[in-house]
Image 1 (tube, rainbow, N blue to C red):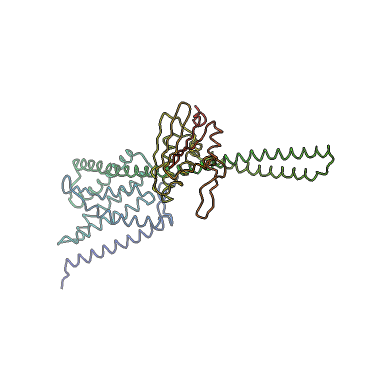
Image 2: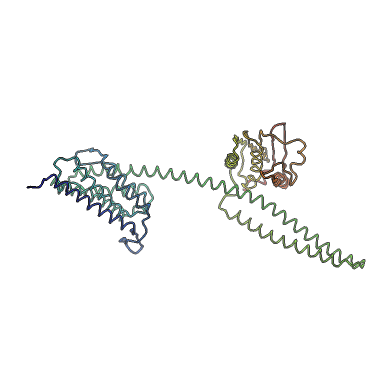
Length: 478
């Protein structure tokens, strides 16, 4: 009894698929253990253990599925010989995008999967399927993808960044790979030679396909750059706010240094006066003098500790690679953005409005933030649930006037003379702990030191804090 040819062919294809799957499994196993790496003195890549991560493994598996399917979404622009599909653009994109995966390994696996997938389709749709014929027609596709990846690796395309240069490499690689595929197809399937007309068609297809991929990649890179720019902006905003808070603390620390120096001098003078008084009056106050001297020594130690802390803070502030001066519009944007987040954190719906009038120079970042942000944060805390906060910055001759206006509950008139006193606060935490009460006193003290002033206006509801400062002390010199 003779064998059924169709049955024989199906068994052969099943064997082919089984063998191919085994080869895939062996190759994938090797690639998960090792990857191709290049060295300065070595042109041929060596396999290296444990480099291809599990993520890369699944990327390769996904490509082995996606590229064959995308290859079936095709059309024939010139004749039945030229097949233009989405498989090559996806493969080129993958080679450019997934830089950690060896191009040679990717080409070997994808070429095998595409060829095997097309043989499988022939078996499924063809009534008179022949494994030998199908393999003869489909194996040139394997050499197309393998040659494409191998040339991509040899030319080190991923080392280049210029899109036009990458596009030229892509065109060269695709033309060469297509020629090899077409030569094999013409030689073993059609039995004819490749013509000049066919070469021209290959070049046209290669140009359009390569630059289509590059356009898509450039769009992705542009999107990534915008995301990175947005992330960097947020990080810089947070950094600026932290540094402005450190700046406030450093100002107070500097003040305590001055106070410690004054107390040290006064204690030493007291000691000298007591010694002189003892000589003149003959009273037994020697122990008192020693105590005064010891107090002077202890205060001096506190001063030295504060000096070390102050030096560390100053170094931290100055070491950050951020500008010291900034455009007033950017400053207002940062203040509004940070306090929008603060309001959201407190569960409040607050509308922020910024108004800038006049031509402004660049202002000192930390001084401006420490002044205005302190007032805006107070306004956010004062508003109960919903409200509006307006930040107004005006330039009047050689003065800058900053207003922070809110429609919160306002400040009782009986507290107007106390609100700028150090330690005064009307804010308490959930556990009843009072606030430090140094924010407004800092603003008043610093504004007066700089030759300006801060005032409060109340009209029943809401507050208007006004800071007037000479521009000379805030603006960038030169």
